[in-house]
Length: 156
Image (cartoon, rainbow, N blue to C red):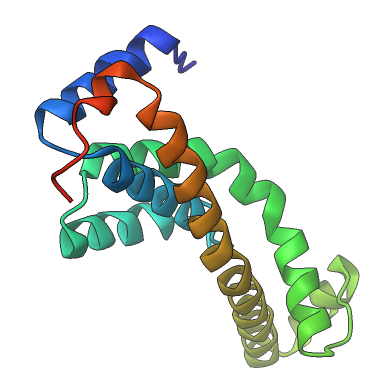
């Protein structure tokens, strides 16, 4: 079992500071990793986080740490994102039994699951943008209170 203590977080944060990352940049990195970690597609967030960190020159360990921290929440949020997508698209609410009944037509099931996934991704995208902004603002304020981070304000 993974155990994270405040001391280990402080040591990791100190390491990130030595790399020249500012509180705002680290907050954005963590917020993006957490938001992407909640995407309603199992197995996709790690690859997306790695690609985004590479493209935006973000800290890979920090974004992946936030991604993995969000993993339990990802599983919990799949159904709410599916329901929100159904509501947004005025699609009929599906139950597990109605999805299982489609087994007679495999292509129909693939189309149906693709539709549900698309609706859930759209719902996630509506929530993720404001969530990243709010988390970035909150985390920036929190990180600036840590003495080691207060010394590294420039560098963005």
